[in-house]
Image (cartoon, rainbow, N blue to C red; front, side):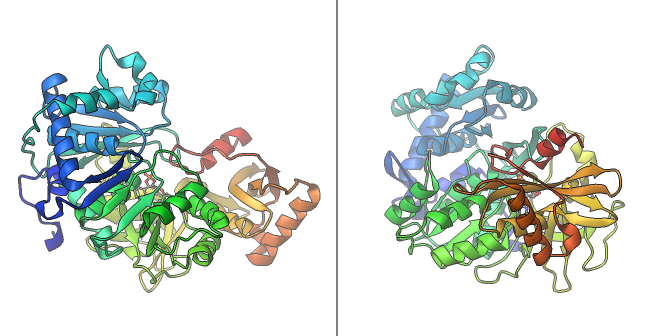
Length: 500
Ligand code: 3UK
């Protein structure tokens, strides 16, 4: 293992991250309740650990469900769970009882902590899962002595992260205390070059490992501050960047696009770095954000299986169209169906290996997606002769039309470049003659009207921009597109609706 990923045998990631005496008086969290120092977060989370152990009967190894929006208490409870030697199972605030049931069953959840407004989602399980709301936790914590953190090992399970991914079936992935440290000592050091005076802000929920890392773990590792926002719009996030003088943003491409449209007149000059992940970053969005903020975004591909970002680039070192290169400590290659590496420049399946990754919780994906430590992410990529990795599509989203391989996303990016288009999704639909044809679902910008003439215009726009055989032979206008709770397009739902 690389020197930066060496940790003592006994390691509790929560203690390591929030208990650093050098940062005691620095601000760790800013939320609507105010500013909280590292010392205060350390103290609060140790009291929450006391509530978990003394009042709720949590023992090391228990799985504790967390259900809340991005706020100080959500973060403090996460730390408290780890300090109690338990395992955090954080869930997206949008999930309802029916969504949580399989998670609770699969992760063998015994205890739960939830935001007061989200308690309903846990109502059906309170007889079997001991549940407190954040307000109760806070009140009880106030009367506790801080619990001395449970001594955990670097190899002990720390969190189980669920993702419904782009296919709809929730899968649980297991991550250990050392993995939490590894991601903090990877991307935010080697790519982002995080500093103690940084102020992080963004949108992904802490229940999504993109948000957990990007919005709290990364800044904390370096003594930097995290702004946590429960509800936001593109406009209000821009204002929060201005008001808190945020320096680093984490969000998904679509949100950068919406912010770019709303940024006029809002002073966001405090920003120094903007990270995009979750979905492929279209060139048009990179350019729009550069124009709006002056910042060249950092693209990074991460996955819940790998805990966080594993291919990326430094600020200002973006190569057009590429996600980047494996971050130090990780290796990536492009393989065929038999796991043999394909020649440079050829499209294949992305396989990645590194210090984190791919331990599925009771799932036969382990057999199909993990081989000799290499994880298949389900993405089609190519590598160029300089070692840059270029995203093509999700493996399942590749379109084959009249013998041509077409990455729907390439067509999407071209359509997004047209001024009438707000959002779009491109899939292959069955066709007797060509096998599949390219079909686009398009959401128009407000003020634009759907028409046959516009269909023609969009088709011509694609033909004029990329190889004409890639143009969408069918275009359907929609008001909204199906997305996961993390904002990813669910192209499979459009395929299901189309009956292919
Ligand atoms: C896609 C990207 C192209 C890709 C995630 C950062 O997204 C995260 O985790 P998920 O498990 O999804 C993983 C899949 O999402 N993807 C993510 N980033 C990019 N595709 N370019 C990108 N930059 O299909 C990948 O396999 O929800 C992202 C950090 C932590 C995460 N969990």
